[in-house]
Picture 1 (cartoon, rainbow, N blue to C red):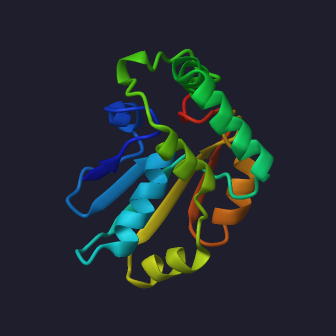
Picture 2 (picture 1 turned 135 degrees about the vertical axis):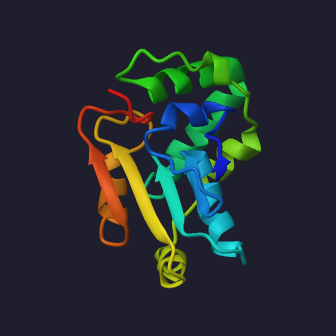
Length: 170
């Protein structure tokens, strides 16, 4: 399986073992990594049977002022920003993500915040025969999970996990 990490994370894949399928024909990604996973599958010429999007970073409905504010906070104090980000990602669990910390860049954060999920790309991937599954936590403090659910549900198999946050843990 090919896996794409979340923003400022590395090696967190094991936290999602119950959602993942170990197969040479599966691609998965968490949060920022979900964006990268979709792009990888869309641009790939090899066989991919399943795309698993774990808490896909979904900010396309946010105002430009929100994006500018996030980038400004990141520039003002990267370590503090990422520490708060990881705390929000872990909510409502008490999971410590510090073992997976890999300080991201401003460019990565900007790419994450400005990415636009494209329905036509999703449809094309589905038309190739690739199954897409989206997992969202209902009490996510990183994204508006309901807005993301409303976007993905008409297109893909989308699961809304009650009492789970961005890490999909309760």
